[in-house]
Picture (spheres, rainbow, N blue to C red):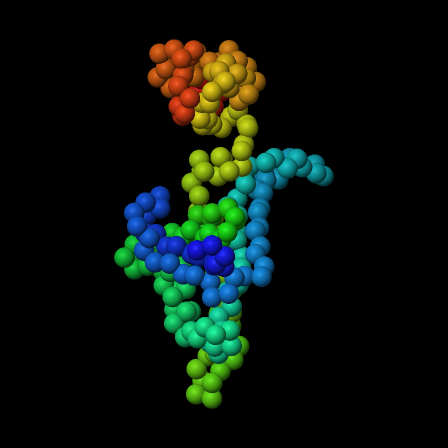
Length: 221
C-alpha cells in the first residue's frame, strides 16, 4: 500500500533453483538499522623455493556474506504486541534446518531497493534482553549472517565480468551486431561465424531483438 513502511523479508524455498512456491516467510518486526555486505577475494600465493616474495594470482571471488540484526519487542511499547518466542521460532523455521530436504532452506532476502539476495543461513545467535518475572522473554535481538547461494552464471552476470575466458550471455538489442558484440567480449570481431554457429543462427545479419546469445570462452570457439 502507498505510504506503508516496507519490511525486510526472508522467503524460504526447498529447491536449489528457487523454483516452486514459497515454503515460509519471515518479516522483520523492526527494520535493521545496519546491514553489512562482506566480500572476499581468493588468491594463490604459492612461491618458488628460495624466493622472498610471491605473486598473488587471482583465483576467484568467494561467495559474499550478508550480516544484519533483527530486533523483536514484546512489550507492546509501539502499539504492536507480539510474542517474542513465537517470532524467534518463526525465524528459525524459515531460515534453519529442514528435515524434508535434509539441509537448511534456500533463502531469498529482500528489502526495498536492496539487491535481492539468494542465500543460505551461515550463522545466527539470539540475545534475550528483557524478561517478565516468570522468565518469559520480552525483547530479543537476532544476529544473523547469510552467505551467497547464487549459481555461477548469476554471480558472473552480477559481477559484469568481461573476461574472454568466461562464458557470457547477451540479449541482442536493436542496433547491435554480432561482430560488434564479439569485439566487445573477445576483442576480435572475426569470431562472429563461430558464435553464430554455436547459437544456431542461420544468418548473423537478421537477429531478432530480444534473442539471447551465448558467447563461450575463446578456447571453445
